[in-house]
Length: 248
Image (cartoon, rainbow, N blue to C red; front, side):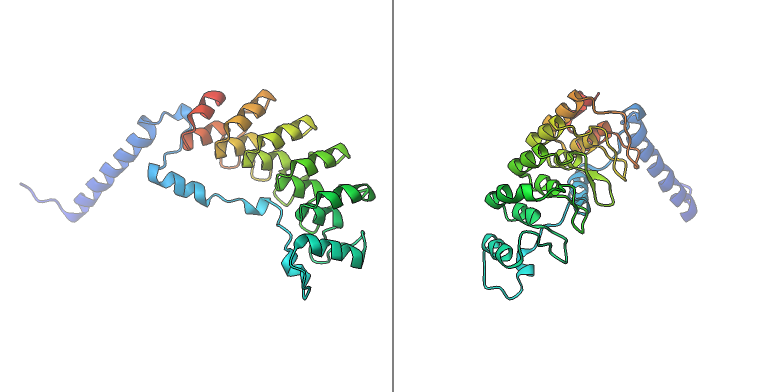
């Protein structure tokens, strides 16, 4: 048998590898499905690395802001802060007013007592979040209901990503909050700075009921983000069969 030179062996290995790659990606996965081929074992690893913390408002660190105070409870500290600095206090570092701090400390009593004092519900802290953003991101339905009833804007965009409350609720799979925001006039098809919509976030995270609700309210299935992916592409990518059937 004739010996092959190292160069020819390398050429053959490369040719076989390319042929196998083409078979896997173009024969097994038709292009009209727009599927991205990723090994099964890597899908969960990939999902675990997709973190969009920069989109969400930061939690207020009561402990860090108490300084030398001997009060352990966030709730007690807030009472002490109001007594010491008054209802118009704004934290210098974060720009948080008392209404926002009441939300962060889950003080419904203070929230209800003082909400009418705050005429500008669209006031934003130093991170670009309104009181409604903080309540919605925390999943605090009663706070959200009250703020919306008082006229807070359900379409407020926060941070540099132009993230909306409906996108956040859809990404988290909070169907109660999704329904509340939609009934209050939240825009279904807003697009953020990376080309994502509420439907794209819901489909990517596998939230079936949220996807159904958004589709029922005429969410646009054809939108592609900056990676050229549609909601259906994410459903195929992560093998969310029920969402695939909804979006087809």
